[in-house]
Length: 429
Image (spheres, rainbow, N blue to C red):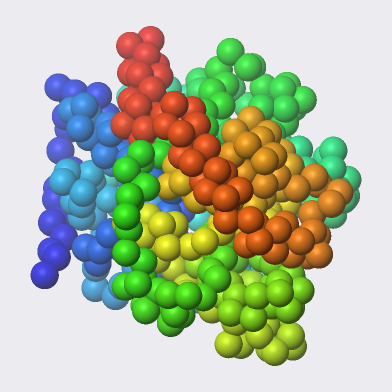
């Protein structure tokens, strides 16, 4: 049984100290507390463990719903010190988050800041670097850094700014994201923005951030994802489909910008040509109920399968099982999921939005639908065309794998690049 070690905070002047400020991560912090394999993008946990591996003192202050009776401080992941902070009114705030209403209730943000301040003061940790993961505690990180003379890093995992201001031009959304916009006006020592297709570099430059302190990396990837001669029968049995079924798959959070409904609407057209088609939807999120209702209305209960969340270790087996991998997103099309699918040698169908063209080329290593020609009927046509041309599918899979091998960094390479930037900040003190 997994046991969490409690610890007593002690001053440590012999090695650099980095403090991460963050809120909960789906399939990450809860899994860590339970001793399970964590999910989520690997860069979350590896930000912590990479610093630990280089001999740094690592503290993670995280606001998340914890089990009753759990110690406020524990040691996890071989030496990372976790400071667990329970949010105010956890059930109500989760209800608001699931309905995308949390951002309108700023009182909860203020309470979160106050609780974090109390925990930071109580811990007596003296950081050399403060690393704000996402924007939740970014302003607090800057204020704290001023008093303790620390360097401060803001880590963003993509952004909706460019889409809201230059694509949709929706004033309600613009008002809602004024906070993240103003963050680009603040003097962070380093802003790390994932190049996930949301064009965060353009947003930061437009907002006036000092681009000399801006880093825009693509995610890393494990390059052992492709399994030659893989026997997919076990995974297919786990899913509940036969070895002869035509399988297509999506993987990711079930939220509005992922546009999973596009593929569900494409299934009836595909089904007329390939009655044994199965759509496997992997992931969880606030839209699951709505998507399940969509499936019922189309009478596709025996065709569309919701698998829920899986661990990151399971991902490779699902990628090696599916016949076609689908990425129908409006945003974040260059996310880790697409990178992993290419590296696993999947036959990929995606959309030409954001920065997608940086890593995929139509009919070379993927099928890339034009933005204006990528609705349900277009996806259906593309998928039917692939199933009718096995030779083309094999060519796309081969090219996807071969290009991924020299195009992407491994996670070790990617995280060591980040650590070098943190080390540089530390030496500048």
